[in-house]
Amino acid sequence: MRDGTQTSTVYEDPRELARVVASMVREVVEGSAPTVTRGATIDNGIREVPTRLLDPLLVISREDAAALLG
Image (cartoon, rainbow, N blue to C red):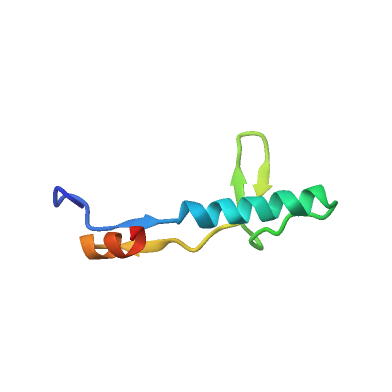
């Protein structure tokens, strides 16, 4: 985007990712299955692993990036 060769990117807040991971770990430690996104899986090369997807935020300008990053 900076060099004018990319029109957009997506951003996932690492703080939100950390909150979600901590929540999933807590669920497992307490003996529950972790909350995952229905129907979403990731192939880790051995099997399809249920996963939890976060909503990405579209970044198309410097102003968008500045608003997201503070």
